[in-house]
Image 1 (cartoon, rainbow, N blue to C red):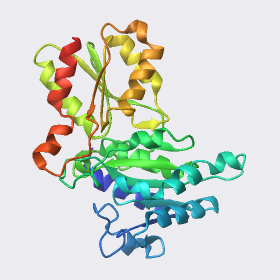
Image 2 (cartoon, one colour):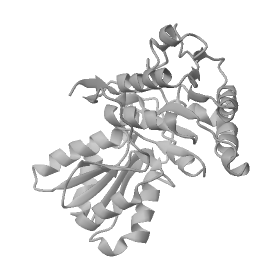
Image 3 (tube, one colour):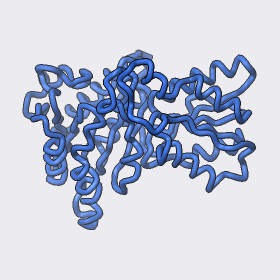
Length: 324
């Protein structure tokens, strides 16, 4: 099977869905023919589909999402790009109070087929306002779907599913994944939301990881394999809906859980995963649950300090060894 990058997989998904359905259009800052997006995901799409369907916008995140919500409820299928995930804070009223609630408030008479693509995560030395991982914010809002693809295959399949769906989706990408290559079939496919993927099977401990942390968990598993420890790596792929069954079944098999995410530890993604297992599978645990996440601090600009706060494979290995 051919290999393409995460960036190329996202671009293919957008191109194919725009060809498939004329109601799909893109909007965001610098996404058009003169720049192609801050991370070049939309590069070349304006040349094919025109400026009406690949719309450069003013620098106003609340305007971008406000327009997208209005377009969605009147029959279009907008895909809005927010240049950095941190900047979703500027549009939280439109996201959390409008897009997430409209279908409920109108008794199902209104649909909101809106996708908000945005990159999260650190590691590129752009400091506290452009490096956060805020996935847990959106998990906390009823009505929003949250996707966290870690591979090109998952990125394409989940984005196509998000565009075809009728609910608002926060589509979380990671800056360090755009160049990562992986196998992606040429034929059309979608990945349904709420279905986790076992990225590596194991017997001794379950590691549930998201986005960039999936790759670090796989590296940790390779390190520990040499020491005789068998690690199962579970990638939820979507946080809302969350595939609780896959996580619990893995924990039932291994008896141990390490939850890994790049967001802050307090009230974060790992907290929810740990709570689910504690409530629904505690009798199967042979050791305490461990969490690996960022400390509760802004992301430093200093490269050494940034690397210090971002979880790595050494931290995952340490957490696993503490419960093996």
